[in-house]
Length: 112
Image (tube, rainbow, N blue to C red; front, side):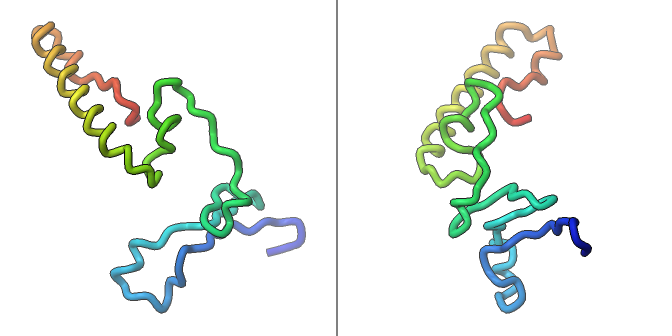
């Protein structure tokens, strides 16, 4: 390191060295700094968190539920609804146009 240079680092949710090996996979970053900027902050560092990125698509579930790691338990109920909707959509695509195989590969979900 030198003056005027920034260090990239992460603060973990627990001390890596003394915990049992099985618990290592449950470690999470609670603070991530890249090029001197805080990129992620949670728990005791949440006051330093940068603002959330805007949701690019208005229908994205991330705008409502906060993304994959959110602790909002209504995700399960709505996820089941989404899965049923996808099943119904897939059945409709199959029955509407079996000759157009390229449509079978389409995905209208937000997983891309």
